[in-house]
Image (cartoon, rainbow, N blue to C red; front, side):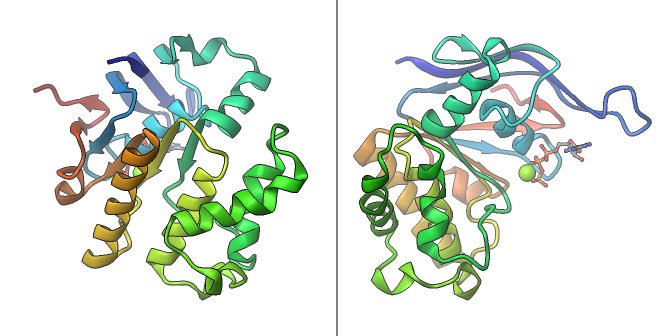
Length: 228
Ligand SMILES: Nc1ncnc2c1ncn2[C@@H]1O[C@H](COP(=O)(O)OP(=O)(O)OP(=O)(O)O)[C@@H](O)[C@H]1O
Ligand SMILES: [Mg+2]
């Protein structure tokens, strides 16, 4: 089994040299195996989002190594990093980053507008496919995101992350604001996507019940991986 992502001794400091400097990651070692559904668990402030932001090239790291398919992220050009973000690694941010007053269709289609490999004529088909794939139906397509429930919004965020057909999906607290039923539905959806597409998925959560449903669990505490 191949490690698609590998972090070795990664340190991350926020606001370096300023009074509010904060060392968020203290030598993180972590691997993500291609095709697995990995749960990354830890309490609030332990560094979970920081790790996802580093893997998806949204943030840098101070020292150590972070590789995707063996390539050191720090050594990629800005253009290569953008390509990686647009085509290979999709992230669902903790706040979902949807545009509330735009429709479901518009939100899901946005990544395709930035993907030069997708011809304009294919955008509609791919967008509708992604919306259907996450269990939303025709009635939802033209609705504004503000008019949807928390679980439905989460599905829109997943459709938006899947529309470019990435290899890796990073989901930051995808069930945090959901009730038990919706939370289970979303986890089942992740399992299905993982099974059907062989997509590598990392789910960040503080909820052991969510983590338990993954193939493997890694725990982070105070910026370090808990061994064992
Ligand atoms: N931009 C920033 N500037 C300064 N400190 C930050 C910044 N972002 C995060 N931190 C700090 O780094 C630590 C790790 O933050 P991170 O967001 O990775 O935690 P988390 O595990 O995702 O927490 P949560 O479960 O609450 O989302 C926290 O103590 C946080 O306050
Ligand atoms: Mg977080």
